[in-house]
Amino acid sequence: MRESKFIIGIDADVHRVAYAALDRGAVRAVGTIERTDYRGRIIEDYDARLMALMRRAKNVGAVVYLEGIYLAVRTGPGSKRNVDSFRKLSEVAGEIKRAARQFGVKLDTVQPSTWQSKVLPGVRGRDDLKQAAIALAQEKWRRPLSSHESDAVCVAIHGFESGKAKHSKAW
Image (cartoon, rainbow, N blue to C red; front, side, top):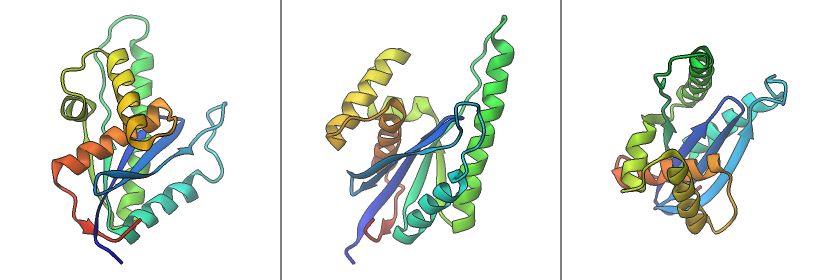
């Protein structure tokens, strides 16, 4: 098989895990693993699909970049909800990291502000960043993408451009 430089970018929230696979900087796969149903219950095949993603990452020698989480400082009535969201996001990040460890996949965490400043330089403000990420990701993939999938593409682009990737087999 030919040598390639493979990166998988992941953008996760409490309901889904969006991923994008890059081979030498070209987008080769984008998808979403649904985590919970509309009631917040874990979907039956979530673990199996997450493990399959990590198995595939191991098989191609990919490096995974996971978008980090942060606790925004807020005061007032919504502050408890923000802490609850942080706790839930931490659980999801832990699930992803555990799956990567089980398959021996290298995983690096990248903070949103880091990938955004490198991949979308000069763009400021949440709404503008989201729109710029969607535009860039859809330009690279040439298909419609969700906001989460677009962020996963951008996280993967950051991983590729950071030069931390090792050579791997084809996806």
